[in-house]
Amino acid sequence: MEILLFILVSVGIIIVPGPNVLVIVSTCISHGRSRGLQTVAGTSAAMLVQLLISAFGTSWFISQLAFGFLWLKWIGVAYLCYLGVNHLINAVKKTDAQEVTGLGSFQRGFWVSLTNPKTILFFSAFLPQFVSASQPYLNQIALLSCIFWLLALVLDSGYVFLANKASKVFGEKLAARQNYFSGALYLGASGVLAATEKGS
View 1 (cartoon, one colour):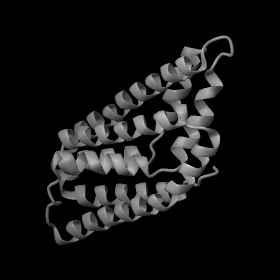
View 2 (view 1 turned 120 degrees about the vertical axis):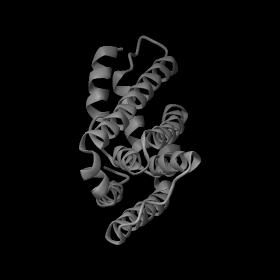
View 3 (view 1 turned 180 degrees about the horizontal axis):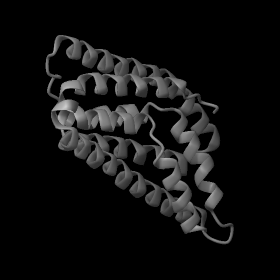
View 4 (view 1 turned 60 degrees about the horizontal axis):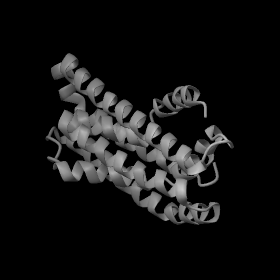
């Protein structure tokens, strides 16, 4: 099992911004570091579910489940569009964004992550590439899943601290435009999520 290679490839995959990262950064900019980290907790919880399904589900079950998630994906897309448009309206009206609770931030991250049908199929195809035939399969999959999950947790949290730092550095300039910026990020996340396909 090539652990170092797995870590390097995983970091390269995780660090590329997708719907999760865009939602995390937008939440952090609009509502602060704590809410950003709570969003990370939500995306991480969803990833645990996805990793468990990909590790223990049969190929047929995973395929059917991913297909079933397709209709949920469009709910996620619609929700992100709603958030984006709402922030843009607030920007035009020059009103503050509605306050979001910790639970709300967690749920936002959880459902946006869980409703991406591509993720489970990716895990089920990616993780076995680093499994050795000479060692127990499930033990290796469990270890690889834990490593990937921890890497995602750390790197996604890093995006929160970067976004929080940017908010402090740019100060009033960013604050005056945060609704525009957050709205654009949410709409971008909805576009990325909408572009994902079950078979890609």
